[in-house]
Length: 118
Image (cartoon, rainbow, N blue to C red):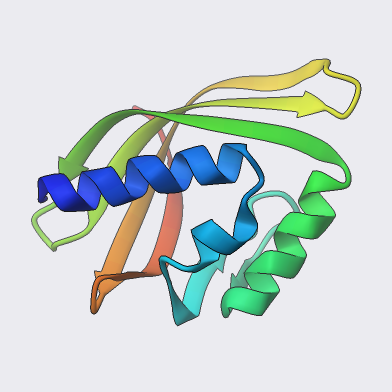
């Protein structure tokens, strides 16, 4: 994994936490395959990711902070994050480590998966 890839992902997490969806979507492949961790299943394409996040942000307030980055043998990038999910009133609904695994195509995020931190 390059320092540039880590920098892009760090900036992307900051943008997500600031709800700057356009900045996050700009680093995604047009046909991005994204987990719908909130409702279940997956969404495909930038506009469906945008719509998914709009629904999510209407109901909960997630915050994800990267803790560690690691390259995987298959070229994917794993990011351990500290995730806090709050209600819109600020009550913590869940908190803990999660691993986000990214696959890049042509320098853009083509797929993201969520794994339990072990």
